[in-house]
Amino acid sequence: MMERIRIVEGDITREQVDAVVNAANSALAGGGGVDGAIHAAAGPELLEAGLALGGCPTGQARSTPGFRLPARWVIHAVGPVWSGGGNGEAALLAGAYRASLEEAVKLGAKTVAFPAISTGVYGYPKDKAAHIALRTVRDFLAECPQLREVRLVCFSKESAEAHREALRELHGMQSDKDR
Ligand code: ADP
Image (cartoon, rainbow, N blue to C red):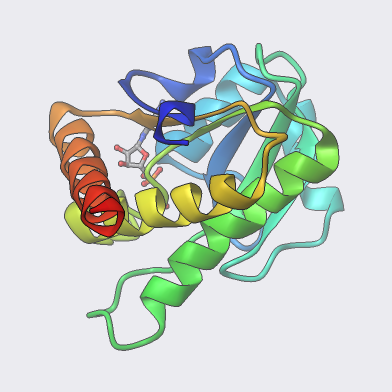
C-alpha cells in the first residue's frame, strides 16, 4: 500500500489529479499560502462556491468543483493552528486528513493531492505534521482500495525531507511487524 503514497516537490495547483486538497480556513473565505495559490489558479468561482458552503469546522473538510484547475474537485480541509501541542492539535490534523480522504472517496476521486496542511501560517512543526500525514494516509489506504494514489505535494526541500523521513519510519515499523 506504500506504493500508493507519493511524496513530490512542487506547486499543488499544477497537479494532474482528480482532487486537490486545500489548506483552508474555517470561513472557506480564501487566504494566503496554498489557499491563495489554489484560488488564484481556480478563478473567482471558487471563492463563491466556498463561501456558499457556510464554513467548515477545524478537523473537517468540504468540497467544491475545481473550476479552472486541472483537478476536477477542491477539497477544503481545515487544519488546526499550532499552539504548543496540548490543545488537541494532533487529533485535529489527523481529522483534517481523514475527512479529506473520506470526501475524496465520496466524490469518486481515484487520485488526490495534499499540501502539508497547517505547516505554513498555522505554525505546525513540519516533522510532527509529516508523521501525522503519513500515518493517517497509510491507515486510510489500508481500508480503502478505491483510492489509487495519494500525493503529498511539498513546497520546499525541507518539507519533502520531513515527509520522506516520516515515510521511512512508517516503513520501518511495518517491516518490524512482519518479522
Ligand atoms: P496553513 O494556514 O494550513 O498553515 P499555508 O498555506 O500557510 O497553510 O501552508 C501550508 C503548506 O503549504 C506550507 O508547507 C506551505 O509551504 C505550502 N504551500 C504554499 N503554497 C503552496 C503551493 N502552491 N503548493 C503546495 N504547497 C504550498
